[in-house]
Image (cartoon, rainbow, N blue to C red):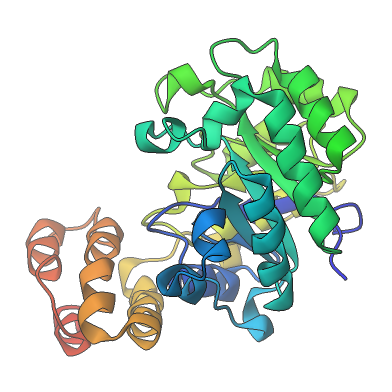
Amino acid sequence: MFSWSSIQRPIVALAPMAGVTDASYRQLIKRIAPEVVVFTEFLSTDAIHFGAKRTLEMLNFDPAIERPFIVQVFGHDPDHFLSAAKVIEELGADGIDINMGCPAAKVVSSCHGSALIREPDLAARLVEATVKAVKIPVSVKTRLGWDSKETLIPFCKRLVDAGATALSIHGRRFCDKFTGKADWEPIYALKEAVSVPVIGNGDIASAADAVEMIKNLDGVMVGRGTFGNPWMMREVVEALRNKNQESRIMNHEQLRPLTFEQKIPWILDHCELAVRFKGERKGMLEMRRHLSSYVKGFDGAKEMRERLVRVEKLDEVREILSI
């Protein structure tokens, strides 16, 4: 059984991102860096509780590729957390992560995501209900605070006392949204104050960033930095693995940035996975923004992007990328 306390350190995780970390993206990341822990997009406990078909479909995963597989959920009803957790465990997930950090207005207005930072009693009850329902580990992803960083440690201690076995912290407050520079100093202080693994998140755009930021933490979580550059996850894993070795000699051939021509088979793999899971029309429509982010930094990239953001069929992508 998966456990946050026994997983190999340093932990490298792919941050849950709405509209991004679907099965096709998770599996692409795992093919590039099998050591990475993957999370689903955040899913509504209300929708799972009531058996919403689309949400239940988003729980599908490939156990041969995606383990450890963590399902991230959001909501505010303890009874719905309890029933949703049972469904998630029965489907074979390795862990459940509760989102207490999303700053989106429509999420917060419903007392979900970051709103729970201002409701520590309710936040603790949600953790307790989830832990009570399942045997798989329950973790929480949150932020430094609502409008102050001083609440981080007491808030997280409440969550750990309620049964949370790991914490992922984004280095911004709710009021910061995604502006300004992420502040990791309160996360380092939190690690000294709790007994569970602590993973830092925010502004990791390279392997060098991960090495610089990890310090006393158990791991790092990378989100927006992977968009258009999923290969970075391999570099992060290798860099952190070699961080404390005496020689620090790394396989430079393996870590040398890929040329665009070398990326093409991976991009096509991503497209094929999207089509397999969502059908050609929907899969290719959702791939358009990924394709746009993949194509940059070389002569003719602009013209190629203009063609790729209009594709409707996989064969069109194959033709455009046949350079």
